[in-house]
Image (tube, rainbow, N blue to C red):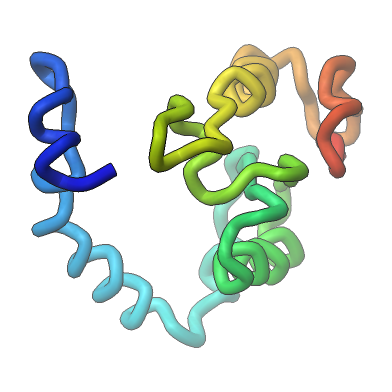
Length: 131
């Protein structure tokens, strides 16, 4: 969606890409600063849920692999056919949005219904269940 169109269609209180864009350089700065420090993530003791889409850019998909290996309490789900915008509502510029699928997995994870080592009952349509 173009920034102008998004600005026009945004509801009261919606955060638009135009509003977020000035903060993106902080994301990339953190990524650069964290280069070579993957081992630090091994100290995270909380349960972590890694989500990805099979159609996300390769660099995003491949970034989850080392995290999955180093995080001690990790669950990972890859959604077949979804891209980086898979958790967003479907629109003319995000034809593959299926937020209900992502919400289902997140709800089970955060409600405690999905424990590490136990497969979720409703994620058979996903390529990987919680481990």
